[in-house]
Amino acid sequence: MGARVDRLKRAAHVARVARPSKLFRALREIGVVGDRPATREGAREFRHALEELGTTYIKLGQLLSSRSDLLPDVYIEELGRLVDEVPPVPFEQILAVVRKDLDPDLFAGIDPEPLATASIAQIHRAQLANGRPVAVKVRIPGVIERVERDLDLIRATARSLDRRSEAAQLLQVEALADELEVHLRAELDFEEEAHNAELIAASVRETSNLVVPQIMRPYVTERVLVLELLEGEKVTANHGLPPERARELARDLFRSYVRQVTVEGVYHADPHRGNVLLTPDGRLALLDFGLLGRLDDGTRRTLSLLLLAIAQNRAEDVADLLLGLSLTTLDSDEPSFVHDIRRKLPRYHWRPLKEIRAGEALADLQRISLRYGIRLPPSFALVAKTLSQADSIARVLDPELDPIALLEEDSLQVMLEEAERHVEPQPLLSYAYTQLDAVSRLPRRIATVVDRLESGTLKIGVVPTGLEGAEDMLRSVANRVGAALIVVGLLVSSALMARVNHAVAIAGFACAFVLGFYMVWKIIRTPGEL
Image 1 (cartoon, rainbow, N blue to C red):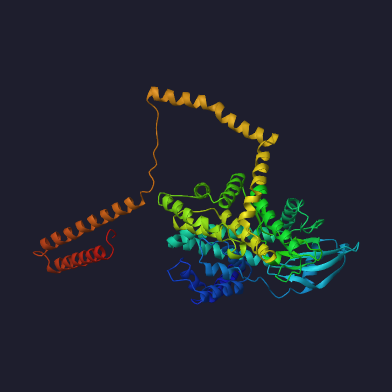
Image 2: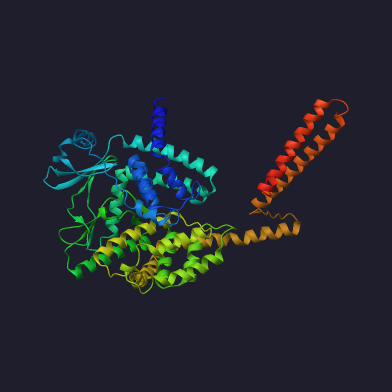
């Protein structure tokens, strides 16, 4: 009962925040309910509303900021400014969590003043008993309960919108709600974050200019994470590095993220400026691994080929690879899609990074796909956002860096590593076994088909698709014919009853008139429907 009351109170609070000048206005401007042009004011109020609603809604906004195919540019830009800052939790509460999860004698001391605060976790400087300085990341008490309550509300809202709005179905609001839940649950579990950090550390180990804080095993629990303390500052235009050093860092950073996506299939999916610090010794430190992108092997290969095709200005290959990644229907306009790709792709060549908006190429591909009814997987949007953030930091370090040219430079190495991966004994034997197994069953299947042809027992099933319009038309015709028969029946029966009972006859004529008038009005207003 208490949980239900809490949910009702939270729903009422969300409704108060979502007054027409905020969330409801934004829903109209992005096309979920109604259709209004997007405005800077509406986007700003939408961002403020999400920040006011807290953890879950801030994460929702951050997730939406990667969907340039779904939201107008002004909303993408504004959501990129979302701030997840809250007043610090009293140190006594943080210390109680640490003492419950870890050995109380582990630390020589913990600084009561937090290094950083957010709605999910708080980070404090500390010193181990052996004198080593560390950072202690502690999950805010009670955040799990708040997130679960908000997720229930968001799922219910998404289901309702998906049932009532075609625009919501196109925007895949239910899929977005599921994706939000996956991301949030990953960020709330620090054991998973520790594992993620170690994966990325292994990925960048050969790049001396990038560093990932070491996880202090075994001092890791679901609520507490102890890791190496790395000092540093956000990357700004006043970084003070020599130009050659800055160019080297920019190239290594961008190349590392491209490699994570195209070769490893596991990538740090949130490299914004707060999570990439410039250390005193002139390296770049990658922080915060609550959100890690993962790609299946087929998607990883397709994305690597796609980036290469973009770099080499091969529009036909770009279109084919995108169609292979996407969900298409009979309504998808593939010829127009290919034509638009041919028209827009060349604009990204022979231009320095300073003249290209971050992530412009991939964002345009997302928008073009949606325009022609081609649905890209959510993984594409997350990769696009990740590479956009990486090249945004590279822009600060080296404004002249051209990421398109850099992709082309690295293409040979990527292809060689992909080929080497395929000829390794274990993957090669596994692939050969699965293919041979299918081939070995082929003669038996052919024999079965031939036997059934000879005996006349072969059955072929055909499932019709794209008949929704015809079904609606037939239903409308049937309804109108049925209504017309009812009107005729009322008129005839009322005329016969006129000799017996005038009141019944008048009532029948009135019903026939009302129903007939309604049919005529409906036909004129919405032809083809009833």
